[in-house]
Length: 178
Length: 178
Image (cartoon, rainbow over all chains, first blue to last red; front, side, top):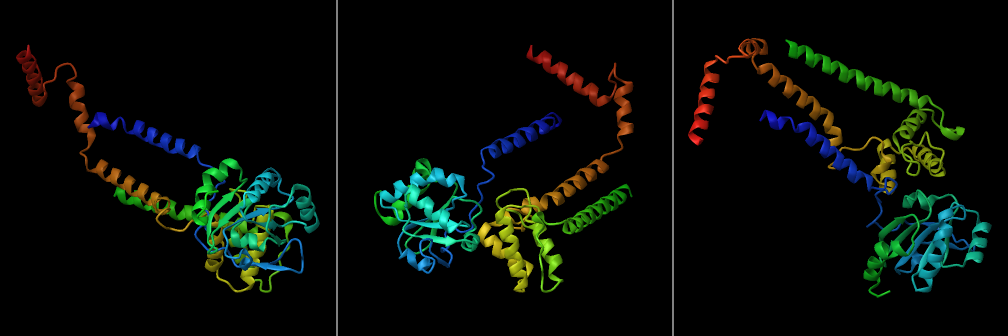
């Protein structure tokens, strides 16, 4: 009994080491999303291309869409943009959420880099951003035909992320092979 | 008696530590908010609540800073949002729930007690209980001084009857095996 008790510190040490070891693999910036499984928030904002034109969540037309949060001040969005162009060419419907940006700059960006978006929501004050819990751009939401958020990605969507995180859900909810 | 004193002491330190927490919180709320925003309230009674909330809510972007400390755009937006909600007569709980539904529990620096956090909240109590348990066991054992002197004096020749018996047993055992 007493001899076994001598091993208690060792056992504690090994236990703590294991806990810390598993902690190493975790990305602390990867926050749990409160919105997956919830309806896309109701909004009412001007579109990017036409100030007079007001867009709402009804404009998703009950289709499966990707909602991509972007801005010209966001460096990683530059890296992500070609991927969005590619997905759009493959028939994925993408809605842009231009987040806390300048209208002229954003339009110039689309003219220069191509426009993969069905339309863009112009959220100058970040109000829809707050309702979505956006804390950094780019962010991408997969919304199903019922307007329910099925997946959220904070950070760049590239081929690897699309394959590992989005593709299976996308094919499942659209019922197609991409 | 000794136990009673210990208990009292531990209660005092417990009370003192909560006092310290309270006073640091009070000092924190007096600190200026980053970016030196001038916040005007229709009712000055809202101001202490505003400061308290900023202390207890976490910036989702710049981790390990609260909303009062952080100068990031998202924190500025959230501060404005909190001010708006306070003016709308929302309770602290409503405001926290509003943010939690968007940014998940991560945003609460004072996590709620639930199935994920009960261990976190309960561990101080568990440690105290464990300590008391060890103390009780320790006190219940007979005074060690009388016990220890016997083997010391007879280090060379164990005259204790039970030791003799054991010795005979061991030797006898050995002979039988040979």
